[in-house]
Length: 268
Ligand SMILES: [Fe+2]
Image (cartoon, rainbow, N blue to C red):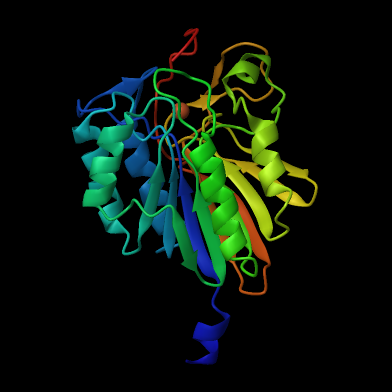
């Protein structure tokens, strides 16, 4: 191993809430979700080049169709690294799992670069809010128990803390106390990461860094008391993880992407 390889950080890309559809020109409030995802992917390649791992944190499909998941999988083939997918409130769990298996994106515990990534399914069929079933909480606890020495990123779709937007209060993780009871037992958890809120968010809770990331399509207005969208470009989050347990992160956006957002909408 050369010195360069030894010191190179692990490069991780988070993509979230692409809301793809079977229809090639499918849009969300005027934003064609396939085009905005492609714009984000081009931006990632232009700015960073290849990642080593991709975390896809839910709402991969708006319509839950097999076609939409396959479009997502094929879109990621420009990257030469593995990805791992979890469901959001818009996803159809069985279809997502089936296509994730086709693209080898169904591992929910990944160890890479001296870090571990635990992907949790917080989706509840037919509901916008999220909850972690006992089986998910057990999976989290057992995984962290088995790997106490690797710094951990725990990812899920729904926000497990208040993000200061009234309309989103009821659509977060409903059993967040149970989630934090598990996380609080494991000091190796460094980051809790999610999607769902279609905006950048950063916070801290008892030494754990809390992060959410813009959608690859439309953005919700941060801090808004009621549903509102903001004409910010589609985005992603980039991480560089060091095997010392340190990391850096940044949000990037496809600023050249042209779109005509319907800002009069009262829902999505
Ligand atoms: Fe979403």
